[in-house]
Image (cartoon, rainbow, N blue to C red; front, side, top):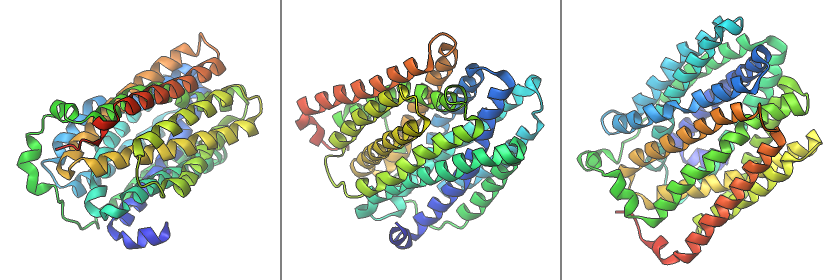
Length: 398
């Protein structure tokens, strides 16, 4: 991994910036979730906060697609981090349940910044790395998320426990500032800019209808987040309500996801073909692990199962991102990634919002079993469709 980062010097800065602001953001997220559970003593607060964090993708995802074809990507990324410096500091003003609205407002604005930042960052990757390294770089992206979860969530849980949530909010603000400084040093030529006029004329509906492969990816971005939303809410609920581990438990389970994502690189970097089939197979396996975990009475066993599920998820994400970066022209990727981010994050937000309310009616372990089954059925169904229409998958996007 270090050797790859040395070769891809521009990407290494993007990687480092994402690592820094990601860790800081996780410090804040863990503190916010624990604070909400303590203030409200209900899963509804967590569900609302998690939903608000992703719902802005519905509004700002399309804006990201508009910006990427009109402004320099580097400075859009810098601006998104700079604005979030001040938004993250607003969480310092939350002292009681009456001020929870500040958490929701700040969460919305931070998410709006991420809705713009994330797809543009992803669209930069194929512009700055060698084509032969795309799969390994996408695997490295999962490692980055893994490190963020381990250092940001696990250590963040302890940090919040020892120093309180306000200290975590300050750390988040500082991390955005450091990321700004790193991103401002980027130097690269946007290869897609010469096709600016062509990119503006892209009919996104026609783009999907022109590729059966992209249609399957679209279905994945709609279906998988429905069950990911449930699983995301349950991680905190399992830690606090089922295993009685508090802030430390939230960080512990998120760090398990991080370990799994980091380990996924050991396998994902060797995948050179059949990305769709492999991605759907590991999606089924991920669902199986989630189902078993939902019934586990041991926090240690649950920790291991979270690792295994994230390991499969990391391989799957590497496969699906590599499909787009390898099969879709660069000047179309900014629009496509923005659209997919809008769909998936809106879906996962609605799912988490619904989960927060459903938790007052249905036992967490039953919901977890349903989520795992959803992953498995989605993977199996789309794999069957892919096998039946195998020839259609070979048609490239124009």
